[in-house]
Image 1 (spheres, one colour):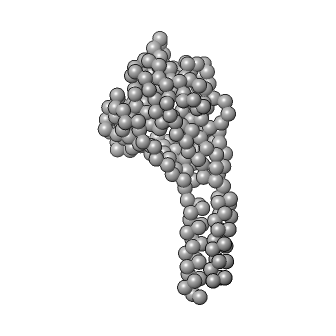
Image 2 (cartoon, helix red, strand yellow; image 1 turned 90 degrees about the horizontal axis):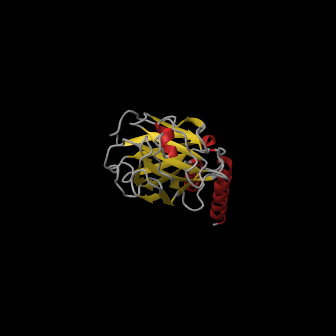
Image 3 (cartoon, rainbow, N blue to C red; image 1 turned 180 degrees about the vertical axis):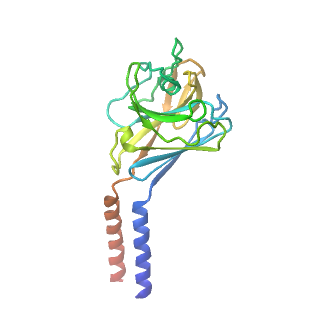
Length: 245
């Protein structure tokens, strides 16, 4: 009887831990190395606790000199391409818009069905900053907030971390909602590389049109009580079966 009780307690601990654990996903770069391979040959890992999404960019072969722009589709509406973005207020905004502030532009057309509402720009060396912006046609992209990029001022770190609240991309905490993302590696003057993470793009490197050919998805951890009730129900079924035996 004591042995059975111990086994049940272990099972309870396992179920509770499983229900309260963070979700995690890892995405690989597209393998390209037009800007040296820092992003195309790197990877992105995302995890969350229901409220905060934490990311790690693991650098590939080359230095991380430019900006990884993660376009995020988290709700209805959104944009099929970057043609209407003209904000050149700083390097991050130029990267999101795909422009140099003058006449040069690289328009990114999104994959079919992917309509981003937000963009996260991670520029540890060129901008020493990472932030989130809401997407809006015109010359003013609304700034949402910092995404706590670490380290900055360094192009050769093996990895870079960032984090943001799910409300910064229009989602509710503990919601089990999903968002889609596409990452493109681009300079702070809108000169686009062939490197992508997550998802993929195709085009001729430079101030040329690009097309997104794939995106990725991520799901926020559900409300703990929902997962816990499910887990305890599963435990009850197992425990009841053991008692009958």
